[in-house]
Image 1 (cartoon, rainbow, N blue to C red):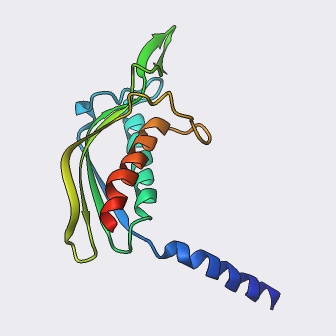
Image 2 (spheres, helix red, strand yellow):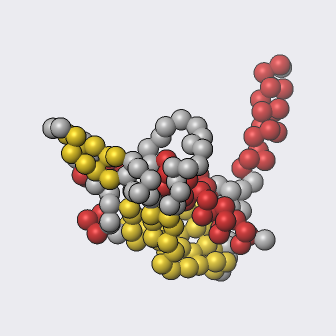
Image 3 (cartoon, one colour):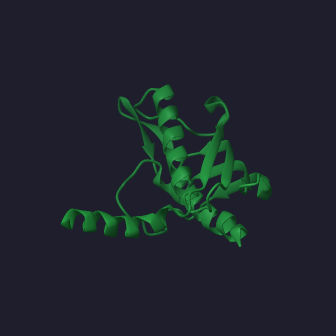
Length: 163
């Protein structure tokens, strides 16, 4: 009986978290056409797949904040990752310095459950020239600066359109 009470209490706490359940869809261009998605010591194809997976997961997590059945469609038209790939002895390494700031270009549309467009824009350019001046929160993760750029854009441009 005690475990039933525990399960019920857990559901009461967890269910409000599922009231928002929007989704995201990401469309990619050919990675050869992006400005800088160069891998350092990894095969190009696996690095490009890693970028796509990481960005899609991040946008999906952000879309959970959207109301149920809302859809954020994002087309990534250009990527310039933070840093620049340089030769370091026998290997190539990505050197992150303030002059190599992250940039993304995208098109997006936000639709409600009826399919009506709430917000949309083309040729949105995201960049953070002071990316290294900000406090880095949390653990080191892949594409941290680019994800932060997307999160800031989402908070400033997408969420205010819900009101």
